[in-house]
Amino acid sequence: MDSKEKEILQLIEENSRIAVDTLAKMVDLSEEETVTIIKKLEEQKVILGYSAVIDWTKVTETETVTAMIDVKVTPKRGVGFDDVAERIYRFPEVRALYLMSGAYDLSVVIEGKTMNEIARFVSQKLSTIDSVLSTTTHFQLKKYKHDGVVFSDGEEDQRIVITP
Image 1: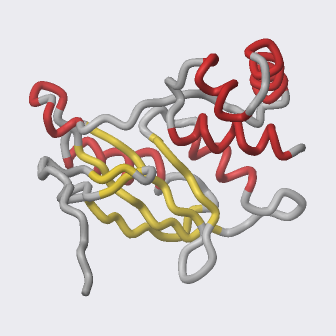
Image 2: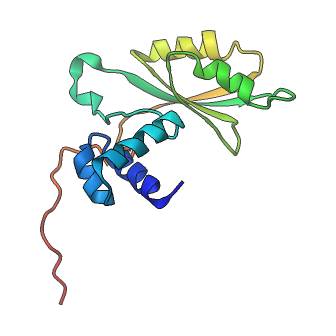
């Protein structure tokens, strides 16, 4: 991967809605070259998708509960954690799944409409998987920052710092 491709990736990660002509100017390439690089990165599955960071607390009719679940599992011979991870990430409730170091093996992020829905997921789906030894569920109370974006209604201080 060359430096232009990395530069494009960084800019798209910062703002996936950036216009191609603007992006091309920023990386000093033609629009055609920029589009070709983006298509190549999409085909190579380096770019997996485009998303927006949304403050769902401002959309009252779509309130959700987010939980992070630490999962201790028994890895299987030959596939390690991959088999159980695949079983878990196939559940539609699962938003993210990570292999972790430390006391727990997997960290699962799920969303539900209520705490009871998440409790049912843990008791009826997650804990019934053979390899799962234990779980610890943490409910997200407030989101301050996500994917590098600060969730705040306060305006940024635009004053310039003056030092003697």
